[in-house]
Length: 221
Length: 76
Image 1 (cartoon, each protein chain N blue to C red):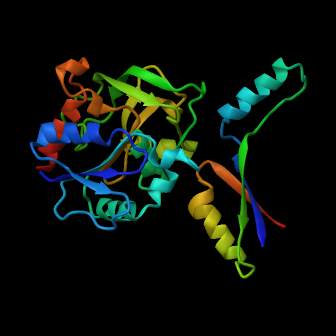
Image 2 (cartoon, rainbow over the protein chains, first blue to last red):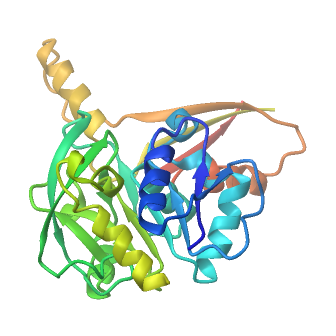
């Protein structure tokens, strides 16, 4: 399966997600520079990596969300191409409006970098089909601005539509209703703060993240 | 034309930075500070022909995230 990783200046997890995608699909992803305006043809998955695109200037993800390539990513997402945004990639997806809400400064103001437990809320999506609903995963987080905010009406709507993919079992950053990952209405866009690409082999201390990519490959192939 | 655009978090959105600053003021002995909201100021030099609609669009499209922030424009 052909995949692409969008490369922004300042992002530092583009290689990690590329390694994860290659190890699961067997094919090197296309690394697409932010200044490009077109994506390669026939992509099965587009990934927006974690890190600090454009140095997090203005707001996390705000400038990346207005870059030429992200306009092409939004068009592809609206045509149904699966898009995953991890950490800063999640922030970019909310800034584009593909996902509801916003990521604010962590409630306790500190940078959180550790393994956390997540509960799988929805196991019916293309991203979560390898998991069971209610299952607990261990996946690392590393962020300063992971405090998910949306107004109560939006939260009720996304919960009602089964669009909360993952929840923290202990709220690490003050997120509304402990939300760690959100799907768009069509189910082809996922944003999450934890880093599944950092849990893809035994040497990482577990494979809980790898199953996300394996499930996605199976669902999309 | 000079513009000053003030971006603040909406009422009802918890402001963790504002809260930390409020606590720091309290620990310096400034009693009675019941709330602090942190924000951002942008100073722009724009063409005199720039319309209010264009300024509003700049704010909505980039300078403020209207999910969580309000903005106010002052012309100098």
